[in-house]
Amino acid sequence: MQNLITDVAGIRVGNASDPKLKSGVTVLMPERPAVAGVSVMGGAPGTRETDLLAPDKTVEKIDALVLSGGSAFGLAAADGVSDMLRKQGVGVPVGPVRVPIVPAAILFDLLNGGTKDWGENPYPALGRAAMKNLGKNFELGTHGAGTGATTANLKGGLGSASESLPSGHTIGALVAVNAVGSATIGDGPHFWAHPFEKEAELGGLGGPESYPSGPPRTKLDAPKNTTIAIIATDATLTQAQCTRLATAAQDGIARALLPAHTPADGDLVFALSTGSKKITDADLLMLGHHASLCLSRAISRGVFSATTAEGDVLPTWKTRFTAP
Image 1: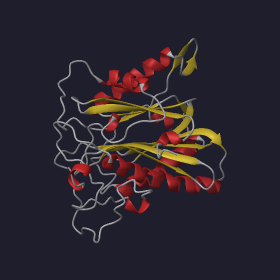
Image 2 (image 1 turned 180 degrees about the vertical axis):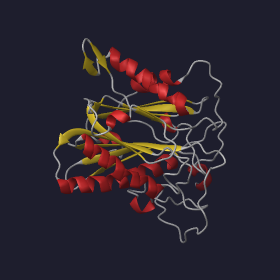
Image 3 (image 1 turned 120 degrees about the vertical axis):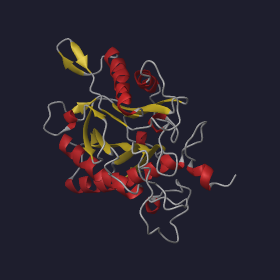
């Protein structure tokens, strides 16, 4: 176990970043088409092909999932991914052709200090580059879709975490943290998700001596945000069960970020099942519980792992709270 979503067998992840653009793309691809669902609880989502993930829709499986920066422009990252999959012969067969199913979600990182005066949209190329980097190991923090992410007080980033359940199932989370709120408590270094920390993955600081009583800090002066995530499991789930898993995992956003699910966020969770291990009703209940805990840890790891870059508008957690 590497504490990554790729601990779920049959999952690969690839990142691509543009440091000058201060943005990037993260692609998750299963070995075989996988059943998926989605839950959207933020008030400002940006998505592609999420309607087909509803339990009553015809196409039940996806070929890849895309998380991207770039606001609406970033949805074009899925074009690059789809083009590469088509060339590989991947997709739903429709007569003599195959149509790749690639749902995507984006976050807003257009005001983060990067160079945005591009000519041709850079995101299809970033999508293709992320596909070329697919593997079991990938970087957290200022990489992929988390390259230009921010929170209310610190740089955001790409986070991941995994857990092995007593039932024998594995669950993993992947998230790009670009929230309107904060992952840390008040002005201190402690994370809201500290009760769920494993093996000092967030610095081993525990919780604060006291909690702030005033309103939570936000970045509403620039209300363009979103935390976008993927939950993956080897449990065999239907499309309806994946939707329920994604909904349960949203609690992980609320546990790790304050405030969460605001009108200015586009908070979204995909859930994906590789379908290799059977599951009972009791297992499904615990799977949703652990999905939320796993996502809360992944969110905090994304902020904890961020690194400094030229032109940053906010400090990283390590810059602000780690002694030189």
